[in-house]
Length: 84
Image (cartoon, rainbow, N blue to C red; front, side, top):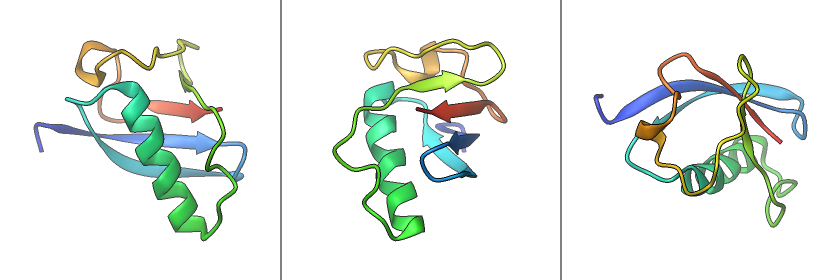
């Protein structure tokens, strides 16, 4: 599992937190789209589809740019992220 990290993603839109493996060789923008699809599938809703979101590091408050590659950020195993 060297190409994925396990992160906890919290979303106020769905009132929950989820542990998700994300690939480190993808852009943050792609990860956001994947996570939105996963969370909508888990919750059997389409609440999040078609909306604009950003990922924020819960500990540092850093907002990740959609053009950043995950491996080039400080996102590591056990990082807690907010999807807002």
